[in-house]
Image 1 (cartoon, rainbow, N blue to C red):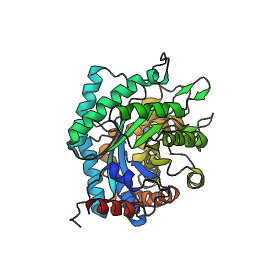
Image 2: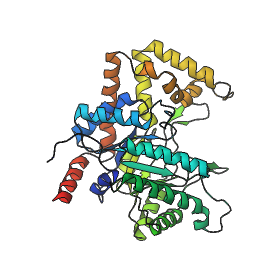
Image 3: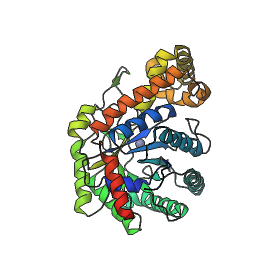
Image 4: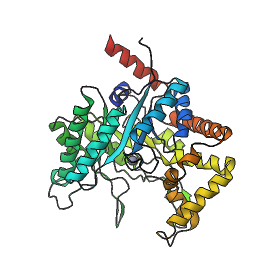
Length: 383
Ligand SMILES: [Zn+2]
């Protein structure tokens, strides 16, 4: 075996290696990167593959709302992998979101992709799901712009990766979008039409994000308290996976917005193998803030005051607790220096908590042992 540098491997290698198994690979969104070492250590100890990811809104050329550029993010994730000596992980660009689809936005997106490729990303999620043509007469017409832009950007990534393999995620049905009746869910027909059209364009995604009833971040009750998320529509998700299989389309499902979903529900009832990638984001931010609250109460209070002060005017009907909960992610950049220079004991507690919580996620996702299976598949390919 060649000497390992513990750099990220291609997302495609991970998806191939777990193909046909009842495994969901966790994609950890580490807005505050301190959790990464705990997550990677748990991945190593349980032999679980993992994705490390941030979305465009969180991490772009200007640092997004986390204060991290693609270069910074890559460096922090590579440092964590090296520190714990873990090798089966991918560096993923989550939600490369295109909202309008005009020339300027496409150009800016290509610049972001350039930086991600240069930083060593090994997996990419193109999200043009906002570009839905409500006037379309057929499913293909409704999805036309999403298909066109996803194709253009997938081809662009391929050319920039210069023959290197990479993971590709695409999105149909905007996650969390609501109409008068509630959340709008992706239909099996839409998923099939979307992937068929991309395949016709020689674009072959490994994983498809759908709208299946989840929401990014926390879910609240009417008085603004955080509640469990029980809204993921499992039968609809299975129906989509089945429709894709019946049409001979080789693509798994990415479950976005898992935070708040009880892990016993995931453990016992999620269709593992239909869902192959599970994104956990806000949860890791909660881990950090929960530790700061006890270990760094003065800093926590400052972050709380800043957030509530800044976002109160925009949320006149909400209670302070919900204003903080919904907007504390924007404090990460503002308090970047403080958050990344906490006491050693604080850092240790964050990593230990991230470690323990990761064990539970990897177990609930059926991930234990996945890293070895991927390593074996890799060595067979080399033979
Ligand atoms: Zn998402």
